[in-house]
Image 1 (cartoon, rainbow, N blue to C red):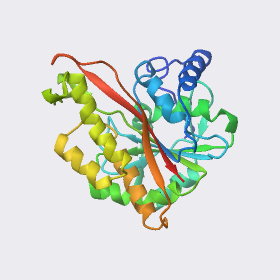
Image 2 (cartoon, rainbow, N blue to C red):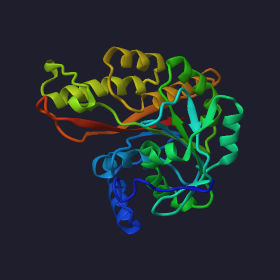
Image 3 (tube, rainbow, N blue to C red):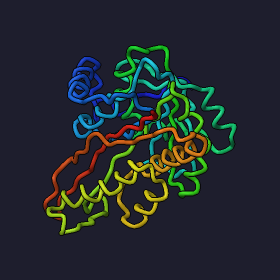
Length: 295
């Protein structure tokens, strides 16, 4: 099997390379860069007209001079998956150029017995991974031909299963030539999402949503895997990438066991909402961009 098509091009983002490059360059130009490159980032995965400006803050932190492998952990929106799955394709198409998959790492993951192969149909239906690809192709342009990706679809897994995958993947996070992209939007609010939590003490509905999101974001910044799991259980916040985030937090937990006190930081760099909800008939999706740095 060769290449996965860019099935969301021309609907979720421009299929025209020149138009897309102009948009991405514009958003990246407005984002600031941290003093140290990221070893992992959290990125939204909505249509670029909604989440593109926020996503730029994550992708700005990826260094094409050092990164040679990029893992992309995205939630499964369409298929029931009790674990994690890797792609059976050799490359993923983007409007810029194809991104080659590191089939050796994919096979290593399958050999653990914990990963399965996703079908091509499931692969091409899923937007959570695809929406990261054009941005990656853009920021990694200086390293074109010298880097590969490892797409991983993450199912609806338990906290203990997140910890299992965190242990498997931690060794890759320790490698400075590897970067992880954790694909997630934050609160999906409104009747169409079946989630209408509202704390009136926060002010308007959109302010309540932001307070709720930032409670979870604070736990991620603390790299607190159990705390984030407890927060989700308590609030039921509709963070669609909660399981990829949980896997990432458990990777850090595993790394810390033998890090000899190495300083690790996660910081959110931008937050936005698709709409400022002021009445119960309205809806919105939240987006957050953050970066994990090892000192």
